[in-house]
Length: 160
Image (cartoon, rainbow, N blue to C red; front, top):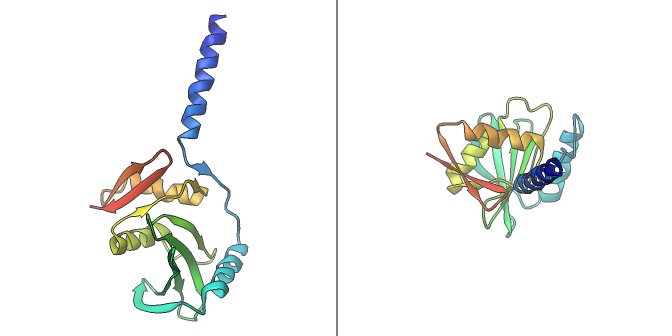
């Protein structure tokens, strides 16, 4: 009976632990599908995009204030969008972000830092792909980024 009670407590605590972690969601696009998804987002927003005149490494930054957030695209010198990111306007939550598979020279965590500097802070989403979880885990060990929990599931990044 004692073993049963201990197991019950263990499972109860494990469930509590799981409910306090961001929900892992699979990437909804893999391989070449990633470029297609970036292009789909681009076709949705391209009429309203403005060239910010800013560059991120070799990419031009285009954006649009959508009212409830800001849409960002990194566009290469050939005019092809390679990264899409939506930043919620109220609490600067990144949701979603999609990078083309062949855009190996774009470090998403570096772009997050760029946006953190621009907006003061960034927040993680409550649902994160494995790639997004890696970015936030990388920030945990980055001496230039301060991470604080907000609520049970989210984190907020600021630059030190």
